[in-house]
Length: 227
Image (cartoon, rainbow, N blue to C red; front, side):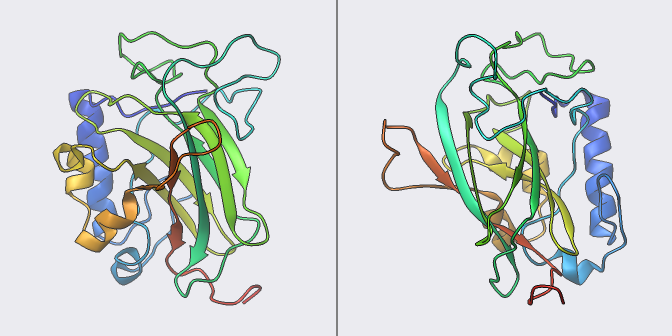
């Protein structure tokens, strides 16, 4: 399934307003909760869900977004792998964390009825997934490199739920014009900007697929399991 951030003027202003709410100490996104500004300045930055969170979930939500179970063909675009961990601030891996992720396809279109983009849909692209970290907090998935969307840089949306904290954020890609993306540009600190950008692994995976590495740090997550 797909959801997005096409910055129609009103959609972009909604995102900017929501980010402003975060700066005031409000956790933006589904299940909003009050957090201090100090907590929000730590860890992976809190960003908005955007206007195109999947309202119709795909029947297939596994870790390979390039193939739909029971479908035909492979999603169009540059196939990539993404791997990382969900961590507490002290570095403790967060086991059994839930990651809900969604993105635009290779043409710059989300599978969402409200997406006004004229780019085509890709019936072979899953567009969204729900993953659970292993005992070491690790996750991995295969997808396609999303196209830039309007004046947004390439990005993948994440809604991450740990033991105590929930984080809605976005992963950006290295080597892109991220500073031209208003949402990225408005991230509080340089350290948080760096935390929002994945790293390209020195070597690709087996068949030459680029591997992007990205860890999610949940500010305020307990440093000990069950704490």
